[in-house]
Image (cartoon, rainbow, N blue to C red; front, side, top):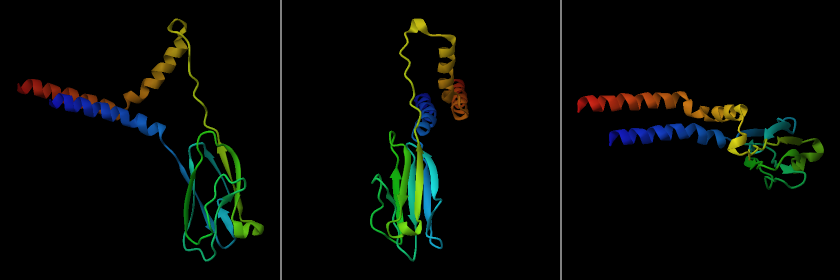
Length: 167
């Protein structure tokens, strides 16, 4: 019973790095420089799947962030804002935005969204597998050989051996 529990824990440890690697999003924060009525930074570059947060607190003048073509809009102007917009896959390019009441004063910015490369599927039969294909498969197997996985395997072996000796 104890060994089964440890094996389940080992499988869980192996799955954690794979799950977190595929679901990482980055939040880029854009604030307001009230002294100069500017977004800071005024230009950011992100990848598809990343988020941009427009965040300001306690501003004397109210602001908002509106994309030129309506892709995003933080809503009515406010002195306190925490608006988050995620650029989903397929939504890439350059997005110009502005603060509605201060646009004429130069309170504008841009977000450049890079496309995420699409992973190609390999539809070759097993007969056409080359050494290069096998090397690529071996590289994709490498997350299973992480240090936590190896540590867990040693722990399972040690505990199993200890159980055998005590019986």
